[in-house]
Length: 177
Image (cartoon, rainbow, N blue to C red; front, side, top):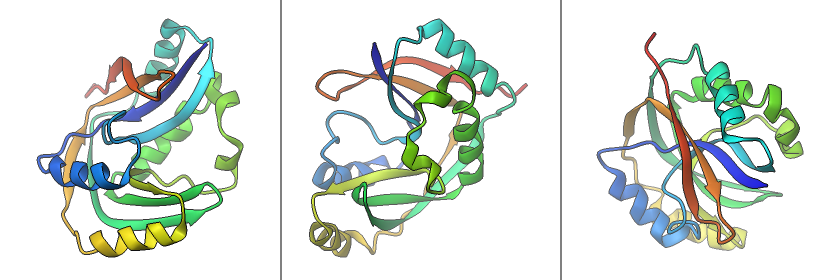
């Protein structure tokens, strides 16, 4: 059984701003680079070839696209307390990819809680044990208004090891054809 996740690792010219915030507030900072999750962690016996075939099929009409993030928002709900970097351009494209990937062989791995909410793609900047910790961190960084822009041209499949470290299993390029 492999524990995997499907995500985008965007590259920004001003990535150090994101990394400084994550270093302070995200417990996974040293385990995984800044990312946008498309398919949440799932354990399966699906082979690499089978998964690659599924993703290639589901993304066959997906071309590289622009992505822009800006604005730090706070989320506090039953799943936890988080700081997210919000997507202001490219969100609909990410939602389509997310929905397409969860069709077919990955459908049974879709978390039940995703059925109850509208999927909101983002980069996690921080994760907190309490609402008070979240509020305190938000006050420290709420005025950061930098824009983060890039072109998304590949999707990554990671393996998550027993220590929660991210190991890239494969990358699938989006094509212009």
